[in-house]
Image (cartoon, rainbow, N blue to C red; front, side, top):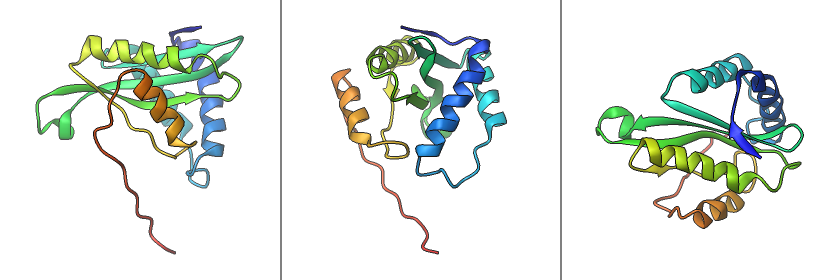
Length: 149
């Protein structure tokens, strides 16, 4: 089942974030859970964002999205984008419905939805396939260069 998040979901979302962070390429970097909680609260009350969850018996996934303007407002054209799209391995059935809920919200509130798929947590190809199944098209790629220490 997918639904809008509630304030009482935030502790569980923090648990999922800690779990995902531990599997991510950023696992050695500090996770600021206070900032994450603040983002969750902002998403629930601001009107400029969304927070949806998937649950079986417990909440096992979430998507957080925002409305923004291209190039930080340089171009006055609004779009919707996700900040986090995290679904635990325990919930392998609700990701498509969760993503569709986000897409519906995005297209209801902006002319377009832009989302990226990276290898920050898992293989991006699986997420990219979901995006394509939902009608999204690839419009670019992401590159990274890390400093050698």
